[in-house]
Image (cartoon, rainbow, N blue to C red; front, top):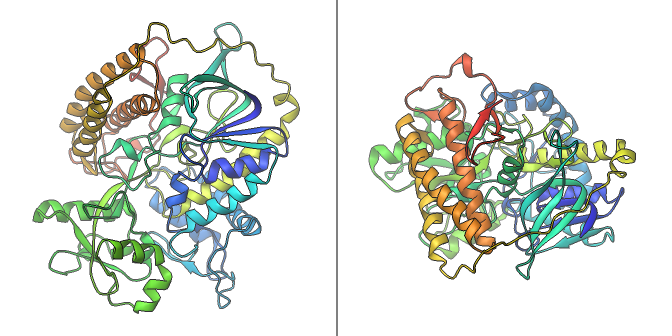
Length: 538
């Protein structure tokens, strides 16, 4: 397979970029499950942008900076907030059906979420991501320049010596197809849009595809990574034995829901003067503390004081899903717990979406652009994805004469060597479970140096075992994902150990204060001659 643009991932970032660059050349979108299996599809809240006369770009910028705990890159925040309204209008022109409100100057029904000082979240009730994904996929399928390949998973990037061992550039990827064959996919531009890392943790709001594949491949290829200690835990994931990673949107609190303990007593006023609309890091830690101090399994979200018809209309997905589990949220509390939700760090990029590797772009949650800093402001993620998809397209368009003439040399075919068929899935399932429990127990919402060191020691052994399995057996999708979550886990741990302070999403009990000496990104790359999992700080 050879194309101009190879896009790995089919969420909002990948599809938005595909639609744009299809004007320049041929596009192949590789997605490891079905085309709609993405974090975008599960996004409930919406997309934040300054759309109303009652709002201002200055306020959106200040809210983003305040949430980011001193680590946002101000020029990136300015860029994204400035271009946000145009990108939202573009989504509407593509057919995204946001909820309307003729009484607002924007013409839209704008929601408010934690950390926002104004109503600025455009939404499609509580299934915004699904609506955006629907509209984008519809347009993508109408474009003859774009091919989507489902059930194809990227194994590793194709790295080519540019000048005999000096600089490297990316020329595509090795991809495992539906026939369990590893094929070569060449491309002039390769773009990582693989989403986040939620499945590294035992409890997550993320879909099963969120195994950090793009981050792991980029690290192995030698890309600069940044801020991987900043894992955002969403405060309110539905707590029910039959519910799997179902998010209770922050918009529920934005519309007046209150967090209460098992006795129905509100508790957020003890932790922040913004109460239930504090930023996610604050709310998640507050819930974690309440649970640990009282020994309970969950806290509760109370929206029973709101009009029943309003709740059903505003949150049809949440109302319907909870009802399936026997919870009528119009007159019963919703049991909730924090769960791993979003990776604020990732593959470091510039303002054009370029990584440190020539020919390799990263967009969406896979990228660390500098927008989110130490804690992402609610509903800024979809905004970042569409703004940077446009920026990456603009870069490619401006340099297409040069990019289109890139000559990709002959690539060595994938070699299985003496590999055997893996007949015992227990080798994968056991380590998968171990990793997720270690990360949840030792590298969660509140961390200590001792627990991080224990996690590192245990994870190194697991990682080495997995690498041996990877060499001994034929590659499978499960093996690829296991290998990737093991590596990403080590990177999160190493980054967390490096930051000896508490800031944003990273709370280290040994160092509970924020320290000026750490007011910078945690940047690192793979050692040139070291083992995987070892890092050099940049």
